[in-house]
Length: 399
Ligand SMILES: [Zn+2]
Image 1 (spheres, rainbow, N blue to C red):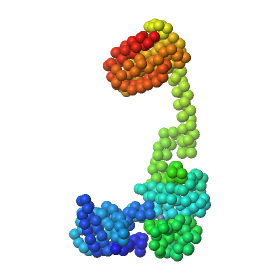
Image 2 (image 1 turned 120 degrees about the horizontal axis):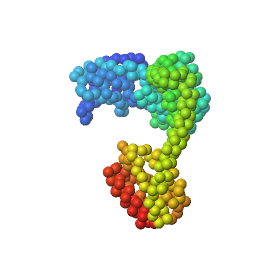
Image 3 (image 1 turned 45 degrees about the vertical axis):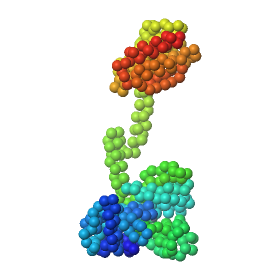
């Protein structure tokens, strides 16, 4: 059995212990001591890391009443001096208590339950049983921060089950053997928990919601606490400063500037489209004049070098405004060959798909469409002339 020193002193960073056993498993060593400060994973809180006699502890986990320290090499001595990575542990304790404060406030104010919590790197996430709307979440966040600034003591108590049933935000698991460890912050939270927390709420520093998403009928809420919240705000600060410099405004004006830019982009797109149509119109007219007559249709064929897919689509529209026209168009650029074959939507007595299929097969590409319009991208740009010849032949035969 390993004595859990972390429950005796939350702020102890080093300890002495005796080696009970060590064994090799797949190149790693499992070390069991008579006592330890290394917290194993549990209750959503990740394990501690650190060193044992200078040997790095990669992970700590609990198996029955023993805590296993996993290392890359064995220990040389049975007298062990352990040091935990205090920076990591302190941040985990900040995050864990921050989560309790937020979850406690969400329960007290809105009766929304936390079903699961997890600390992963700088993120704390909690899953709620019912959807939590943003105003409720922000209200709980504000209340959690009030609790932080009140610098309340964090108590660890072992009350009887009757009191727990009456006061706890959450009941202990069915198989929990009393006494049950309760983490209590007067007026804010009362919950069974095996994890480690800073000893007063002020040490959490700050609780900040960063995002919310829907999750399995409830909400998944992401928050940052303590130093992790500070790091997040610091990176936001630098990003916002960059945006301020780019947009030449203070942070309050960023959204207004973005709205102006978006509307300018919209206007430019329309202007660009009108210009494209205007410059393509003479080409469309000349292609129609030169078009080969085949039965009741006229086949207008053209390849635009280094043009964009959009230009081909505009040209297609201009040509097929003529109800007798069938357009066989392509453009070749760095991305490959774009082919578009079709006619006016009103033409029911022609199916362009066999012609398109032939062309796209020769081009080694993919695509599809309807009886009046088919399009796709191919790779073999050197076979483009052959592909269009075959498409035109197929159209001639289908007249
Ligand atoms: Zn907890």
